[in-house]
Image 1: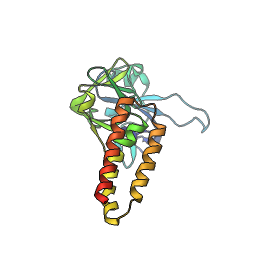
Image 2: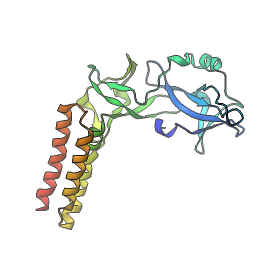
Image 3: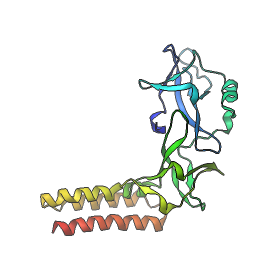
Image 4: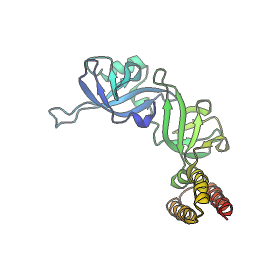
Length: 231
């Protein structure tokens, strides 16, 4: 399951009664493991908000697009804490948290993650390095073996920036589009890529300059190569 697929899902009892809506996916305070969900119960009388609850993921399953809690009603916070062995306030929400390498270099923030629903173990971490980076080379990806857990206010990796894979971004799109442009015998594609990169650069000024320049150079090279091939 992906973190992004769980937020705002309806939580049902085993009898099919609506118990609330998922707020956040909660992680172990150190390990790369999902331990529970925060759930917002329906408003009392449809008007008055009620306090969120802490639900162990071990007592939940995904069924027909909803989260089904194995019980008739949401457990008390104290009961959930006893079952998980953690205090709710000690758990961590990973989405949006900073990500740092083994040497302590900041590489971005958590955009998403894939985890095993049965064990809670994180299998893949998706990292956003800012608008420019995401558009240029795509989001960065770290496998389970490269994820250490959470420490000192950041999700920690067991590797360095250069060890991370990127999902492709504009360079990948440009490479694919080059074939189309070549077949069509048109340079319109190049103008579109240039315009897109200008927009990406203008909104991505805050990204680390050195890395940003390398990304821009990579995209420019992809477009340039495509243009030469087009004749």
